[in-house]
Image (cartoon, rainbow, N blue to C red):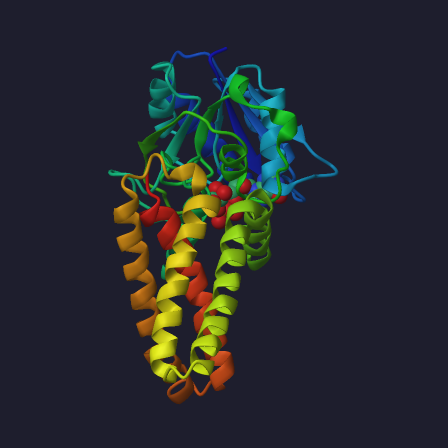
Length: 354
Ligand code: GDD
Ligand code: MN
């Protein structure tokens, strides 16, 4: 067998026959199997058994009565049960066009990649099937944040949130995975440096039924992200926090020596921006310095960013207070939180870009 196609399903009955038909047609004459890992509460298992009887390729069903780990847990079970080392993971609602499996397999057979990702965000791919503008924005923003947290491991992956990919099971420490919720590819890529290749695809609208994505899935994703990468970002936060304290201390010290307060504030800011940069160089991003060009250039980018940020924050506070009628201390706190996240993304993706 050359390929196992793993399809997690939760109440996807009306999509099953069409998915099997298109998947078999996409790989004519090739020895493949389709494994449904099903957590449904409706009649989807019966439908899968029915379709399996007349299917042109072997169709297997793993129905889980006590599902663990949601979508991600289902995928891991499918990979474990697969007959082939090459496993494609694909949604069961035809948002992932089965025809693309042929591209994934062709790319994997070139032999230089352990994971081949079907990406919406690489040239030739689209994310039009993301029902609405809000989801598109959430998807883009969370992709950026995720890439910022794992700049090295995800460097060659434009779409770590996709649910459509091929993996060579031999490259996986499958028992190390802690799948929770939807983002199983992220879980795989964040644990270990992998050789990643990509092929583009058009994320299509659903064939039938409704999405199971939800606010609580979003929260689970954020938890997953924090758990996987508590390291770099918390270090970044600690450095930033100490910098703020130092800033105030320097300002206070200068003023006690009679320096005018605005001058003191500027000197204190410049000194803390420099100290902050040094801490980033030698602590937070120490492992990324070698591959990201000249220190001088990083310093210019970092310094410019911090300067602009400090200047832009003031009118934003003014807007929040006067237009959105938010209490001033709260408004300042909100801008600090936003600035912290943007600063982290900027440093990880731009200043320390390989
Ligand atoms: N076995 C199992 N258990 N399958 C599940 C579960 C579960 O708890 N929850 C969802 N699924 C199945 C669905 O039946 C479907 O086949 C697939 O997982 C994806 O679920 P959708 O409800 O269609 O999610 P989506 O389209 O909103 O999200 C998809 O696209 C995102 C990209 O924007 C998923 O592929 C996400 O992983 C992906 O990030
Ligand atoms: Mn879907």
